[in-house]
Image (tube, rainbow, N blue to C red; front, side, top):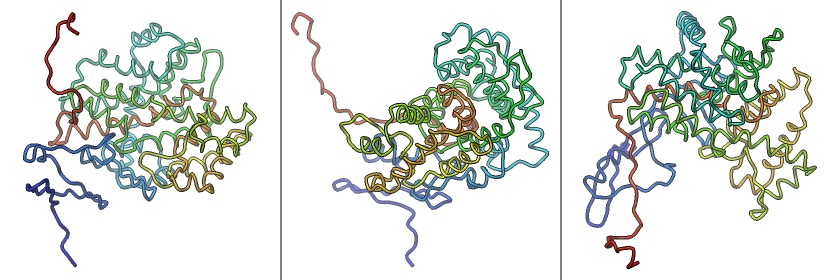
Length: 431
């Protein structure tokens, strides 16, 4: 059996360079091209960085061809079945599951940092009520930097940990306040007697007028959504957090940028687009088959949302979990949901139609998450805010990992210039 090579050779004309190979623990192989420009005068060209490894990471493993997602080695299916959100957050931070003592201390620490400064509460009043909650959350998280000016990129580990706990604890409060501000309701203080997801629902829906007890079924469903959103390798928002952090920006500024990246309809905003698509089918009295036929016509202007993924070329494992959770949630609440019926019919058509099968357009996490959010009575423009709440541990863990990496440096991609060559300036009267 031939020996596994440790290098790759690249030949350009009569010159040759030998480049090291880096191997991941799951068998991935990367060519280390760091010497390429210095020694050969060339760079790699990879629009969208779809074939470029920007870092070495221990946080999340994703195999899009086989539909595999693992947090620090643990399959997402097992975590969704057995774990809860704060335990998953610890796992992402440390790449190990906590002991009972560690988890209890962590939960206690998070609970007692959920309040935000009263001056920060007044910050919301300066923003338009019609503003999108994602814009409000991004601005507010960025503003945390002004309340914790001692937080720096190069803080010792214990200070970075304090910032991580503060951000994780305060994000549900900020998310709920962005909603309360939009509807003109009074802000509700967090309750330290409630678990993380229950507290988020309490601050969203409670009012001073009457007692509110979060439904345990809703709490479990929200916790599941947060777990499934917690990290997803080097996606657009995560790589944004790493990129901003690479400039020595602090954690709050970096995560604020990540929230803005997640807002885009091609990223976290897709779950909102899925619900809007299902509503348009329902209200337009169009059949699922008619919609799918239009989606195949490039000239129709109709786009199928919630199918396909930049990385997955198989069924998104998170979508499988959420499909099952949809049925369980709606069965336990006794809620009939015509949008779920439309979604199931769209999926059945796509899995049998050669057009979608050949293009590997399987349902992704956004396809079913919106239906669950809607069943929880969460407004459509808050869907992506809760996605951001779930993704927060991943952003923080990736920021911390970048900080610990001795090979980390400021992110600065190259380009292939194709503009004008050298030319002389002409006075305006001669142009």
